[in-house]
Length: 150
Image 1 (cartoon, helix red, strand yellow):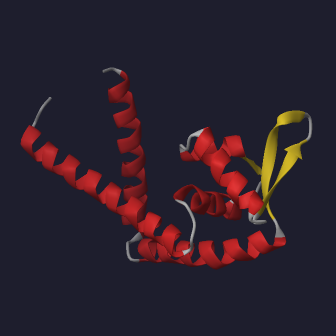
Image 2: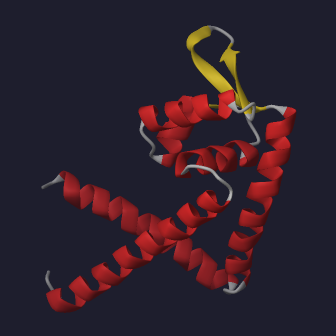
C-alpha cells in the first residue's frame, strides 16, 4: 500500500503549496479590486451563473460557510452591487442578483479573471486539460473519502 511514503510526502507538500499559491493569487486579485475573497467569489459565481442563484447555492457549491457568504452579501448589498430577491414560495431563501452598477462592476472584475483562467487552459492541450480536471476531482473525492474513515 505505501509504495514510497517519502515521495508521497513530497508530492503532498508540493500540491498543498500550489493550492495555497492559487488561493493567494485569487486573494491578491480580490485585494487589487478592494474586495474580500468571499465578495470576489460571489461576483464570480453570480456573473457566471446562467440560472438564478441563492446564498445556499453559493455556500453548498463553493464550500463557503453561510456566515462568510451572508456577511459578504450584506456588504455588497449595502454598496449597491447586489440585491437579494425573495424566492417565490420560500420565505427564507433569496436569489442573489446584480444591480445595474453591480453588473458593470462584475464585468470589469470577472471578465479579465475568466480570460486569464482561459489562457491557462489554452496553454495546455485538450488531453492535458481533461486529465488535469479529472485528476483534481479524483484527488478531492479520494481525500474526502479517506479522511472520513479517520
